[in-house]
Every structure is written in structure tokens, then in C-alpha cells.
Amino acid sequence: GAVVSQHPSRVICKSGTSVKIECRSLDFQATTMFWYRQFPKQSLMLMATSNEGSKATYEQGVEKDKFLINHASLTLSTLTVTSAHPEDSSFYICSAAAPGAREKLFFGSGTQLSVL
Amino acid sequence: GENVEQHPSTLSVQEGDSAVIKCTYSDSASNYFPWYKQELGKRPQLIIDIRSNVGEKKDQRIAVTLNKTAKHFSLHITETQPEDSAVYFCAAANTGRRALTFGSGTRLQVQP
Image 1 (cartoon, each protein chain N blue to C red):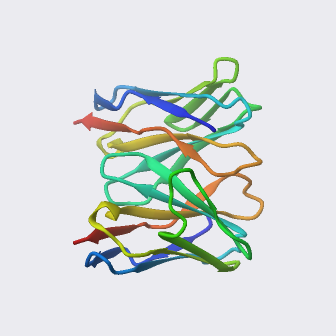
Image 2 (cartoon, chains in turn orange, purple):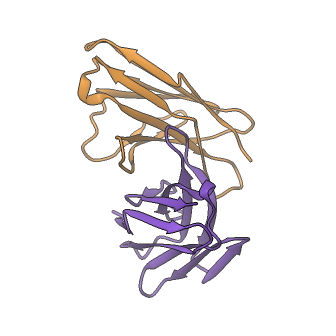
């Protein structure tokens, strides 16, 4: 199946700093990637849809100025958590659909963000 | 938007027994229903999916049924094994939007 790589797997940072998370499709081109957030023992909540070459579409309640998404190429989308605070601590996970796979999504390995 | 509800939140079965997890969805435009298995700290893994033009799909010990009229779908795991223990998520999407809306998850514990 298609491979989605996500880095870093774990980040610990101080409050007020910014953190960048990368999501790469390794063996296919993804015009659309999705960013999810998962709090402990909870479900995956869609944060935004990342579109190559255009602005991301954010879900209601997600601050676009806080969670900056850049999808500059067909294989890379980045999520930057700006001025991170402890309440931003969560598991962030990206996903992408491979061409021809219709709605079938492949997930990255996730990034555990801990803000002190 | 789409809303997916999932029950039960936790499920404990004896090894060898069957497990059933149920989900309902709200958007009649949804036409794709995958099930994911997630182990602690890991990425969700697709285990089976079904499209709205099919009522049932089976893959070895795993099966999924879909009732479009009632807007619900279920995951059936037979002959459960300890390695089936994990959190299972149902999800729904439509071809146009593509993004998945997940259910709240079911923590399955298979007792040896």
C-alpha cells in the first residue's frame, strides 16, 4: 500500500515556541492531505484539509493563524503549531489519499507533541 | 456536516468469541465506510472498508455490514484473538469531500 511518512514522531517544547511537523507521501503524489488531532483516549478530529498549491481548508473551531499549513509540493505538507501552549499537547497525524484509491486514506505515523 | 456515532465505547470478550461494534452516520451523501484498528501510540490501520453499493463484505475473520436505509454499519470479528485487542474506529466519507469523519472509538479487550 501507499506509504505516508511523518516527522518528527515526538516533540517536547517550551510554551511559546513553534513546532513544525512534516508529512510526506513517499511513493505517490498527493494533491490533498488531511491533518487530524487526537487527544488521549479520544477520536481523531479533522483539523484541516491541505491542498497542493492553494490555501488549506480549516474545520470550524480550528485557528488558521495558530495551525499553519503549507502544501508546497505534491509530496509534502507541513503543519506548524505557532506559539504552542500546553493545551496544544496532542497526537497530530496526517493522512493522504493515493491516486486511484478514491477515498481510501493512508496515515502517517503521527507526532506526539508535548508542550511544557 | 457528517456525524458518526459508535457503540460500545469498551468491549471485553473471551478469546474465541465474536465481537460486534456498531456505528451510525447522519449524512445520506456518505458512501464510503472504513474501519480502522489503532494500537496505543500508533497510526490507524485500515482493516476493512465498504462502499454504499454493497451490503456486506468479509475478509477472513472480519466482516462489515451496511444498512443504507437505517444509516448504520457494523464490524463483526469472529474467533477473536488476544492480538485483536486495540481501539477500533469506524468512519464515513463521501466521494466529494473525501475527508473521513471518525466515530468515537471502541476499546476492544480480548481476554485469553
